[in-house]
Image (cartoon, rainbow, N blue to C red; front, side, top):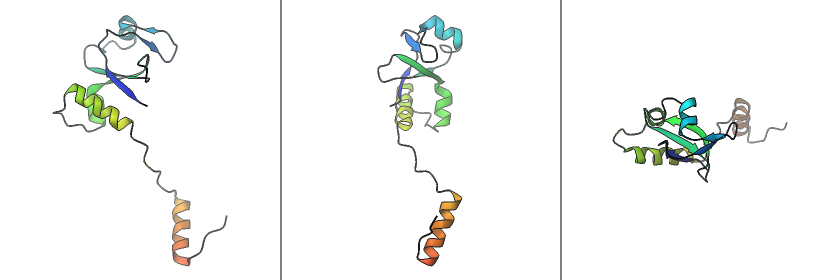
Length: 111
């Protein structure tokens, strides 16, 4: 499950990549603009691990969110969208042709 929260610099996380302490100084060393612009933390369900740090503005654009949403509303909507089940994969070309053959002949295709 994707859990998102606004980055404020006041909470200490653990970096997922190397399991080191991700306090404000460590985060700002890796992501110097983290407090200059609104960022959101992609964390685990326990809120302990900093998996990713996203620019809220970029994520609003990526998900085509209405600009009238507040920061908290936008973060909640992005989290909701990221937790949706993945779409069904499109059939590949061979499956498409096999389905067409079956529809035309009324039989099945053997492999």
